[in-house]
Length: 98
Image (tube, rainbow, N blue to C red):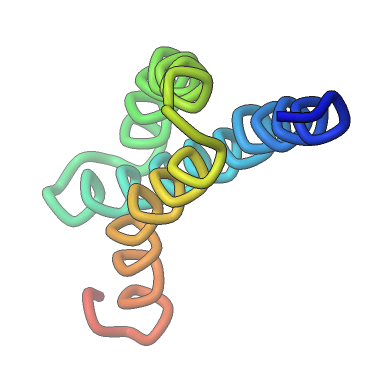
């Protein structure tokens, strides 16, 4: 692997870890708050509970991105992990879960 290609791979992982990890964690917080609210937990309590859980989840996502065998696998892992919470958010947006 050339030096430029290696540097590009590292930059891509940093973007995936911090940007993609933030987006994934935000989706999880939104979906978790929606699910807790549907189970009868109050809005502020649901938001607080999912926000507290988001900190170790974000750290785990960052570690997982840098642990992945390749940059491609790191990005694919983020996309696959984001599908279920994105689906929950889309269903609520369309009025299917309300």
